[in-house]
Length: 167
Image (tube, one colour):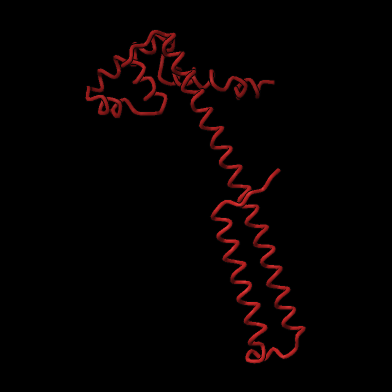
């Protein structure tokens, strides 16, 4: 797997390297002012600093790799979202729902209350109840819960907890 630094990682790596160079230079040039007359101590500090730089680079690499995996996952989720939309749209069309009924169906599936749907559409709550009843009849379900459950079953057929627990 190829590894590439992104610009934020590169900038941070350059900054850490620059800080390390400054610190090493200061230790070498001003060691007498700090009371560091023996070279063993200076070399120990340099070694510790180099260790921290290497560790920092490894952490940056890990962060960058995680970011890449998150971006790939987000892309997969976006593609699945399109697929879910396609499944819902296809089923609503198959049931012969009108454009208004389809819009209300989407809002129901998103969890909007009938009051919120009515406000969004500038109609009364009673009108939304009438549309919902038509939607339920056309989809052959008896309630909002059954309607939402139909799509959950359709989109997640292998995850029925009732069947899983009865085995």
